[in-house]
Image: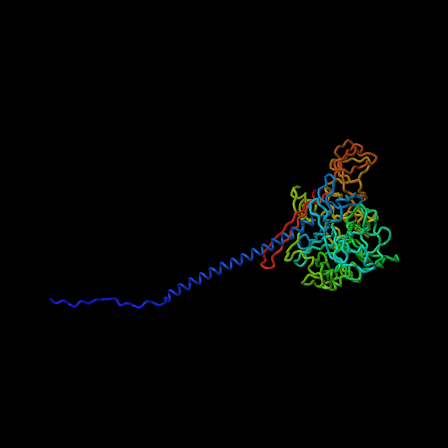
Length: 581
């Protein structure tokens, strides 16, 4: 039998493959790229998160710094609520009105300007770091001081010696004027010390480097003495961080200024008791940022300087206060000297800075050596102040701008609440709060020792002294019939003639009286009106009850909005401060 030969069928063995296919390469590359993109995304997100956290941390730090500074300053404010029954918050001082020497010291001022603009508010007040009623920490404020060579370099009353060390270029004090304002996206805090020298000013003869009364329990024993020293020849606020003003002297009686002297404000300048000091800071003339010019055509009324006028007043630019760069400029010849172009003369910068410059620094005073020293926060979009109005929202209260036009409220723009053109940074519609002084005047030269008086520029009241048509507002008269709706202001000579431009006040309107019992007409002789809320007095057939007409400023809210300059992240800080004690 024939058999075919055995044939072995074997698969050919191919050599091992040495690489990837194109498809495999594409898949692998895609996966690697995706992984790299994922890692890059994670890394980018991580970096972005870290940067955002860093920005938030920086913003938090800035916010805490601003919040802390505002709170400490407000807690150390010298003007406080009085002890009077039924009064809550701070109330402005009024003509012939008693002053609480302990609680009503210095001043508290803020300006709303345009209620629709959150960038043009100004806050300025006095602080004393020795006060502990709100903050138990006792501190000391320090600033620059220069040793003066004239008239006596070794005089112990040198400002440079206020810290007890002569020649170190540093002065110190427990008290100061503090100003907050916003300009060009920068929030500024300007601090000017009130002198508190270890060696008091002389009591017998004019001494060098004069300050306010330097000794005495209430300052009454040591009155102001004029200086024999010459005007400081250098730029004052380049060398000093002190509150000062320019004393103008008319030597020949022609009603024109012949001589100028630098006057330091001291801790006794805080005293508002009439006669305790010749130049109290309660009178605006002596404050920082207020117009000290006396010569015509501008009267000496201490108007706050918050705008500069361009093109003969056609346009205005808000500046708040002069910044430290400007006051340290060699061209800023104030308060130690006098130039024809006084920086506080409101139309003066018109020839220099028209139109407004982009850097928001007045050109004439740009380039001062101390630029930025008063800068508190940059990148700020708004600095807004609001008041607590207890009359809003059906008398439940609410926040509003000073001089608002909301329904109800006691801090509205009404005829009983002054909006003076005579005192304020603007020519009209000045919504500002000022604690004032009993001897301050809107219509003549400020002088703490004369009887020229006037009401404060803003004084919220329960009942307006101006009859509104629905109120029976009157003065006392004999044998008159009254109703339970009668409001009596015994010391106002002519309520119907009361106006913002001519306040016809015989004394004050801080108290009013309403009948609580009527059984006939008023008597034939005016009774002795009590000055304590709730007290009553019999007047013929009428029993009157006393009411305090003052409405105190109970609280303010300060809102600061700013952005991080790097990533633009926003932040807002709100500080609410109550004046009620």
